[in-house]
Image (cartoon, rainbow, N blue to C red):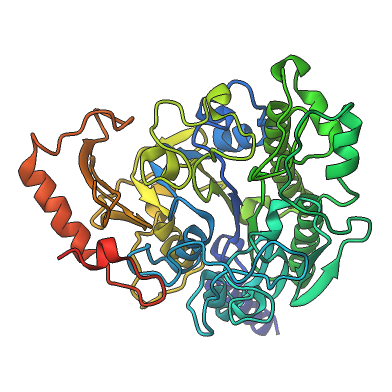
Length: 492
């Protein structure tokens, strides 16, 4: 009898040792990827910002890893997000620019060029793996009812401003939730692009005109917190994609958030034009970024509250560099530092973005990586984290070894194209071509190690290097019938 009992105990012990399911260290991590909208390289305190307060993101960097050579997928919204979701750079991806499905009116069709059914997005693949998937924020890869809508691209739960144009107003009259129109009571509809001839009599008049009851970023946060709780209740690993609309203009933020910044910053109001007016544009821009910082803090607090922090990796970045429009004063904030260019440009200021990774027990606190990386790397990285062996070709490298403190050598170049511009980085060298197909095209070559601000063109002094990168750029793309680009398509 004793022998039988001992045998049962021994068998149970062996099963416990052999079972990977019961060992939390072998469980796939929860994955949170937070994407800011138009946040510049130096707009976080951990990246050198001195005016804008971002305490939670700065703490995240202190507790994790900060990348100093990270780039977005493109210098504008839709194409950058397509690169992120598919791992294919703009020379291979489907969406290569901000294609629009409608205009600015209340009842215009919504959405950008839709991803087709069957696209191997991060969410589609993780859902197959058993992850609960959710997206809360700005989408931009297909309007309601199209094949590109989040519910057809692998997301179990979604609440989004599905159309980028609608995202120009932070108090829209509706969002889209799990494929259904979600009306925000108390907001109504008003034009997101207005210009006034002279300042209004009081600040309150601005707020009465251009603010409403429900700030859409707050709605996204509430939905995301509920999603994390649901995943915890169901005991499922989760992928949370949180593409915040902040700090993309218009300058709109709850009035109480402005109190964190001095009135003397703003000597005159922004009267609008391409976006809505604001009486305190500098304070509003800083307050928006601080609002996003608080959202990140709320997500982290939810992980702690539910005991999920230790098995969750959190990544934070931005879809492109700082904007030049809508009352944003990038010079006042030194948003790009020494970098050249802004949003829409393939120069460093349009592409180089913050990237912070927090992975308890895996990523060393306070570590810094200068490994050149960009959005195509996120696709294989997330699949690697989830234990997925994806055989579909992509343009990135898994960054998991870097997260774990190991050395890596990049073998794939970093490639971008946007309109009449093209750029490629190989090692420390960067090729920049602009005004392609025009009468005055420009081809330049920079060494980013010595010249991060792209001030010294070495095209004439390094002809062999220039030709190498030109040939590599030609091999790095194929023409698109959906987004034809004569300046590049005819380049042979």
